[in-house]
Image: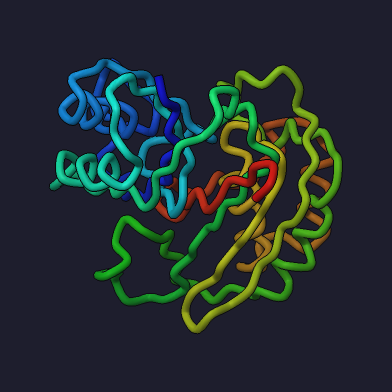
Length: 248
């Protein structure tokens, strides 16, 4: 039995999320079926993170265990052939130790959120960014975001359906910048709560619009109450960006 670490890129638009769902297609199901088509084996995919319906990935790390002798490059090529035309690509594949785990060995995760700050309808970025037509003040958003960096109780920014044992997390960074008509929000932590990134982005957008002052984000955090959340940003602007492992 060989354990393979795979790096996936995917457009989350047609999927109900990464994890298998009884009510619709998932990234996990698509990759597991591609492995079965390649090797004849039924496998279980384990991932560094769980993404909701409509959320994308630039480099999601996953692993599968395969009994059939096959080298990593051939596996990658075969999986990509079987995944077509689904919007999933295996960017890299490598053999890893039997105790390496995509989820439990992960030391940190990062996400990127894209806001298209323009009035014209989206064409190339449709379903891949959150369109906000009113002008956004990116420097104000960045300043407000710094109140969330560090170790805090993120109850306000946590979905009511979150299954994490504790709302306390340590946010390593939360940066906001403008690139032309795009507002780019980057964040990193060891792990995140369900909807945490989207909830933080939604509140920062309120600051950018001028509907909240910069201190509003800190007040929402201190409330430790989901009812204090101003806005939960939509899924289509969110991308799982990277996962960090020992030795990398």
